[in-house]
Image (cartoon, rainbow, N blue to C red; front, side):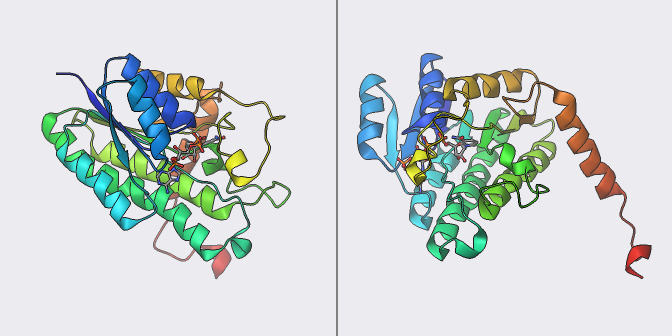
Length: 255
Ligand SMILES: NC(=O)c1ccc[n+]([C@@H]2O[C@H](COP(=O)([O-])OP(=O)(O)OC[C@H]3O[C@@H](n4cnc5c(N)ncnc54)[C@H](OP(=O)(O)O)[C@@H]3O)[C@@H](O)[C@H]2O)c1
C-alpha cells in the first residue's frame, strides 16, 4: 500500500511544494485549502489526489479535516496552512487575531490530535508543523520591525508543541518535526500587501528538501537556513537550564 499524506495549505507556496514532492515520491495525497480552483488544478495534474476545500479558521472547516486525519491511515500530516497578519497586537483587528490563532494554533493542534492515535496504533507516522524562525524572535527589541506578537506567539507555540509531543511519542514510531524557515519566496507576504521581492529568500522547494532530510537526520526542529546547528542546540540547552533552574522559594531579587 502507498504511503498517504495530508497537506494543509496546498494551494500555494510551501504546501504546494510539499504536495508536489510527495506526489512525485509516490505518496497518495489529500490536499486542502480554500482556493478550489488551485486544488482542482493540482488534482488534474496529479490523478488520484483527493482535494478538500476547507477554511481552517472555522470550527467546521477544521472539523472536516480533523475527521479525515482521524479516519484515514495517514503516514504523514503536514500542518502548513498559515496567515501572518503582521501587525502590533493593539492594531490587529479582533477577527484577524482570531483567524491567525485558529489557523496556526487551533487547527494544527486538532489535526495532530486526530492523526496521532491512528499513527501510534499503526506504529508509524510523521507530522510536520510549519512554524518559522520568527518563533525565536521574542527577545528582539522594538527596533526589529514589523511587530507581530500574535504571529510570533503562534510559531513559538508550534515549537513547544512539537518538541513536547515528539518526546511524548518516543518509541511509538511516530515522529514530530517543527519546520522553521526564514523568509521564503511564496505568496505569503504579497497576500498581506508586503513586497519582499528585494529580500533574499529561500525557495519553497529547498524548505521541503530540508524537512524531508531533517527527518532522516533525526531532527525535531528543522531550520532550513541555519548552517550552524550549534546555535539551535544552545537555545534548547538554555531553555532546559532555565526550566531546571526554578525552585519553589521566591527568588531573592523579588524579596
Ligand atoms: N513565506 C515565508 O516567508 C514563511 C516563513 C516562515 C514560515 N512560513 C509558514 O509557511 C506556511 C506556508 O506559507 P507560504 O509561505 O507557503 O504562504 P502561502 O503561499 O500564502 O500559502 C499559505 C497557504 O495556507 C492556506 N491558508 C491560509 N489561510 C487558510 C485558511 N483559513 N484555511 C485553509 N487554508 C488556509 C492557503 O490556502 P488558501 O488561501 O487557498 O486557503 C495557502 O495554501 C505558513 O504557515 C507560514 O506561517 C512562511
